[in-house]
Amino acid sequence: MKRPPNYIILKQALRYLSESEKKELLKNLSTLNIKHKPFLNKFKKCFNIELFKTEPLIWQDIWLYNYIKYDTDVKIRRNGLIAQYERSVYIEDDATFFSKREMLNSKNV
Image (tube, rainbow, N blue to C red; front, side, top):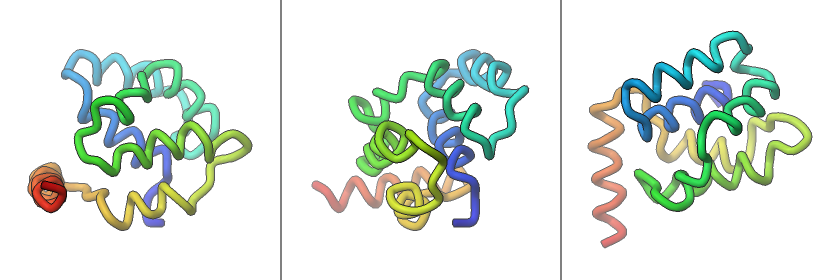
């Protein structure tokens, strides 16, 4: 993996939020190190992870939900669902992300 799992989760979660919600979430998480488990615990309290399951922007967002729900109980893993998500979906640039999202969704039609 090129990026920390929590970074990937946070970047995707920010796409679900309005500008004011983004600022509030980032303010709540700003004191924590993004690479450690306390960051993810606080993130789960501040963001409704059910959105990844019930209102996904792309169908692979369910992988993030399952990763957060089932793969992070003991420690932050860098393999499995999060690695698969990064390889197949995660793109840094928003314009590229949305064009890839449209391509992925059109394949499912």
